[in-house]
Image 1 (cartoon, rainbow, N blue to C red):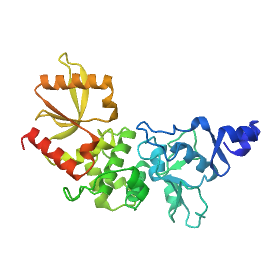
Image 2: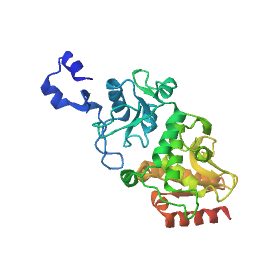
Image 3: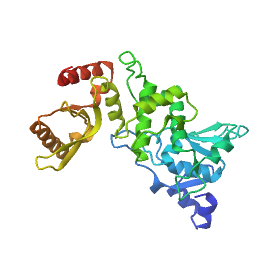
Image 4: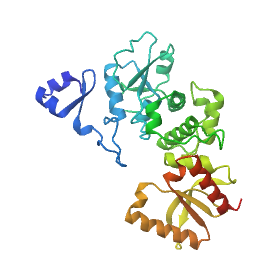
Length: 320
């Protein structure tokens, strides 16, 4: 709400001070709408205002701007990565981009009219907020990942594996993680056409889309897939595991079904008692069916040495 709307609603200056947070010039959000200070893993959030709320606030004051990149993806529902990336809006070449909020990036373009003509309104409750289409947003996210950003390197850690597999630079790994996350958000059943990705080299768009898996449900799963996919043909995601009675017990994150080798990425929730009991049941079902499982943790994907060791273990399971 704007300060004028708060005043008209009878909210006093004291109530604004105690219960409302200014997130844009003249725009406020109630403290109840803020995200928890700590993430599930115990890390402190850099930004507690949801990305879609920040985007609404900016559009309220600047309805001619068009959200793109991580901002557009956040408005479309993507929660992974978008909460701490700068909010990016496309503006005219003559727009004043100084004195903006620290969380904003205003990108000048002479093609704003074209971007606006093809823009979409993902947030139907707030038609002022225009966003580039999903393909353009993905292209702009990938382009943004090519920029040096020390803060991103600190919060979004991926190993540089290019000495092992030349394609797996940090930027490329992150690009595929973003593509997987956006495809999951949009509930797509197959990767988008690389031609829909705007403003990045064609070969980069094709490479990222070529590595995209719509079945990947988390960034670590994406990284795991990228580091093992060359070990043997037939790797696929979300392989069902059945009980002896024929009921679906779970799905393996990745695996070679014909070889009977299934991979699971174990996040922190796998340390909980109930989850450990379930994991034991899964292990028994896989063993009963003649398969083998390998549970992978974050530590095994943290650096080059860990990845080398993991690949060697999987080679032994596959017999290659």
